[in-house]
Amino acid sequence: MRSALPKVLHPLCGRPLIAWPVAAAREAGVGRVIVVDNPKRRLAAHLPDEVEVAIQEEPRGTGDAVAAAAPLLDPDSTVVVINGDVALLTAEAIGKLIEAHEAAGASATMATMELDEPGTYGRVIRDSDGSVARVAEAKTAGDATPEELEIREVNTGVYAFDGGDLVKALETLDSDNAQGELYLPDVLPAMRDAGKTVAAHPIGDPDLTHGVDNRVDLAYAHRVAQRRILEAHMLAGVTIVDPASTRIDVAVAIGSDTTIEPFTQLTGATTVGSGVVIGANSTLIDSTVGDGVTVLQSHLNQARVDDQATVGPFAYLRPDAHLHRKAKAGAFVEIKNSEIGEGTKVPHLSYVGDADVGPGTNIGAGNITANYDGRNKHRTTIGANVKTSVDTAFVAPVTIGDNAYTGAGSVITEDVPSGALGIARARQKNIEGYADRKER
Image 1 (cartoon, helix red, strand yellow):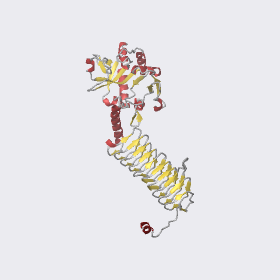
Image 2 (tube, helix red, strand yellow):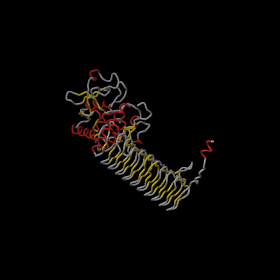
Image 3 (tube, helix red, strand yellow):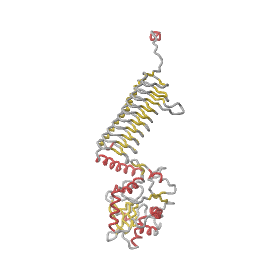
Image 4 (cartoon, rainbow, N blue to C red):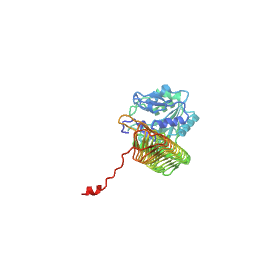
């Protein structure tokens, strides 16, 4: 990956690579999930709490990695082994592998696939009866013979094992190969020598076991995962006008009859309700949008928009901005850490930060809550049914009572009582003949 970030922590559609096979395994109903990490222990923070972690002290190959987890394995259970970079493997594929393995009564069942260009994948060497004899590795020159390299059936790196047989076979591994590593596939001939059956399960779609070794592989995985995500939403009743220009992360939830217009991104833990319109060029990050909302060409980050509210165009809702039902944040409006009451409108060209605005209020164009004094943030409170005029600045902390008004161009530094009109501006003075005097 040519990166300081561990390969399996590179993000893919909203979750790190390692989290994809973990999620698939959990969805398939496995009893325990064990992830093998290195001594730096950088993976644990990115895994669900119930996932167990084993430590491979030195990078001595896939066989050694599984051996590191051996003390945690149940010898009486089926054990599935998956590479941590196989992000496109599905729960359905895992379930079918387990079914095939248990139906065959095998000690090991290898998921295989056929490729036109097998590359460095290990080649599956079958016996005359069709069972698997061994795997010829092809990562380094000398691992496999020229004849073996002609084989198109390859090992995907996904296996199902009898737990007890696996633990015994791991003890037989040695590093007599070009890379000096302990290869997990070498347990297969050991099992055969012990009179056990080794089966193969053709997995079908090569995408299921697509491994990520570089950023080209990662981009391919992203295309496939994104297509699956978009298709699932469309089949559930969401209109995605142009899937090719739309990005939706795996954890995003969208209600039916919602329309997602082109060049839109819904990322993180975003939730969108039913009957929503997300307009073109909008970005929603970790935000919650209720039913019947319209968002037009706007950016929402950790914001909440309740039912039937409207946002945009060109609005910016920052963390903890909360628009209540039927509220509006209009054109070129920025809101941060504020409650905007039911039916309240902030129509255009305003900044509302660290404020509580009651229901039914109208904020005039160009209003500003001056919330920062150079050291600390302060809140502005604006009551219900307030009408503020254009170019009003509220110097927090300040409170505007219910049904109050402000005069255009005012800088409000003191509280305005309920029902009062607050005006804070210099008197206008006209100087007659000024233009002629300036000309002279």
